[in-house]
Length: 243
Ligand code: URA
Image 1 (cartoon, helix red, strand yellow):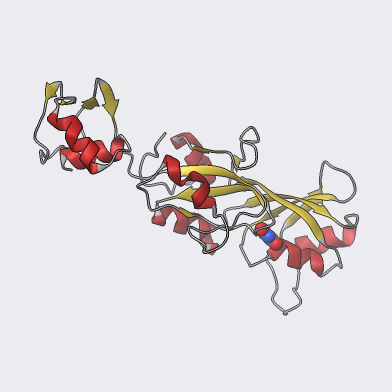
Image 2 (cartoon, rainbow, N blue to C red; image 1 turned 180 degrees about the horizontal axis):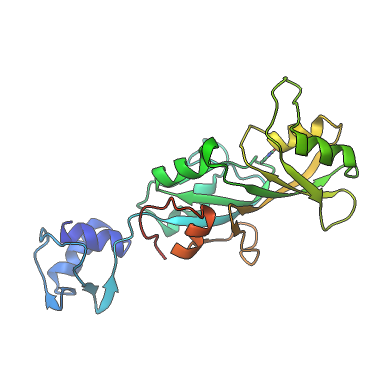
């Protein structure tokens, strides 16, 4: 990769800032000051900016605790999107949400620029489980639990894959659901078959990775490589994620 491109990407700087830093001798390649903007630098090279090591982070994986009212999209004409919430921290990335939550739902949304990884975790064949905490407008019943386990037939006739449903921690109207597919408004429609409305819906885990509850509504952070690996235990991320 060209040195100016590498510095811009790794330091999250504009290309012109990166060039200025290189010209003033702030960038060293393998210990030696390098002023050649177009110097080709290989993956193994040790590059520093003002003495700090730089690493190219090919892809970024961000955990967001989505608040209510925010839409799961990259851009929207009228509403705030999940990408709007994080864009300032990763300004030059082609970010998008890997999977959606309804506008009224809250919790774990994964935002990335790694299309292949997103495709991997969303692919129906992968069956990556997603865990939700739900508050119903009526108590959970054994019929609901048995029906979810068997596969709910929705009002339009489509039959959902079996889903784990168990009592939640917040009283008789609370439940925990684990889904391995992603159909539009799936949980609301599944409970709707039993005449139950969903008052609150919060995604608390994707694959084996729980939402970091210390983030708070609208909080976000980059995931470590170990955390990314927890999402799809058999692999999927093709590149070491950024910090
Ligand atoms: N199911 C729903 O109904 N809504 C969501 O946001 C996620 C799953």
